[in-house]
Image (cartoon, rainbow, N blue to C red; front, side, top):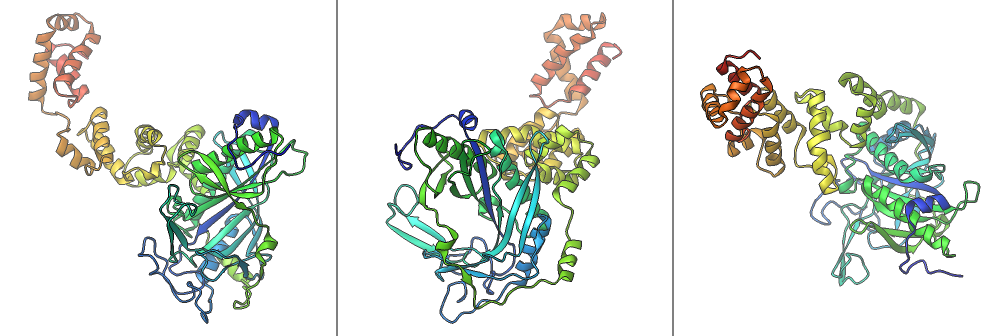
Length: 507
């Protein structure tokens, strides 16, 4: 029986799918290198420039324009290879990957094929419960990015149904490193979690190496996720799909979960999985068919005749190795010791993407405990309502440290601080500006507090006698009355002390 792979199908529940089939995945991660110019020409690399202004004859593929290799990009590629425990090639070369698409002005992409600059590496990634999973890396190779097509008209923003298309070549020629894993087996039900942790680990490494801003929302880091199912771990690998250009950690996880359920439904119904590219739809959490996936032979690779082989000397490679910064795992261990966080606390921080934010908040003057409280408490709750990331919130580590400073100085209590936080997130300014605009400072004048205490005692005449009689806990109701009268702006500790003093009772 043949089942269509393109029409709608009833998905199998994920847990049932991984109980019936063994998932195997692989990821190709592309990172845009943060060089000043492009991979093979002097055109500037500028994000957000007017379309087709950051270009040159070479990046436009004009006749007679010859490429020149960007030396900084080669160094960045070696840094990445070393950080991923790869062997750095003694010699490697570029190749032409031939395909025809409007955003590829030369009708080929200059890439590396059989001779990558780095190969045979691995990366150990930590999962949410502390489990370490090793991902084997086949290669990391250099190439150039394509331009960007914009399809105008139609309902989907894709070429199908569009009225016309526009091409911006500003991105064409930007240096990339593509990191290709070997098939990743043995993940079972945790396959999506492993994929997410792997891409996050790579992003952290790129930033630590300072080779890229690694901002996924800008497309600095993009993942192509390959997924196949097989009957058992001993069975041959199944036919894979490749979900293209997934650009968030959460989407990597969701894309794998969907593909597992989709392919399991096909196979369970007697259908076949087609080797094809798939488009990821963030709004629906689904993939749709793209084109039949080409094999390497279809690209007619051949050595780039206009570029000499690259032969990084062993001395240069070792010099780069010696200059590598502290890697993310070592940094996490050091910060955990400095901050005295428990293992579980540190794992939560890392899994939430809060490590850099907390470090910057501490550097701005907050204590580690208070920085963790804000980012993992109130701000994490805000993120849960938006399905976003902590780093995308409209508040900076300096502002969080300033907010905590107001609490530490007694200018705010915790309740007021939360209101100030809401104001900062709403774009009302810095913490101090929100305090001033909203009139949220703590009432610290003893005269005003004593007047409020008198009103609270008058409203509860029997409470004073209970307190004088030794029922100190009764002071809480008076404190509550004062807090209500001052709209929560009183210092509860100071109010309590004044009440006991007024009643002649020792605390």
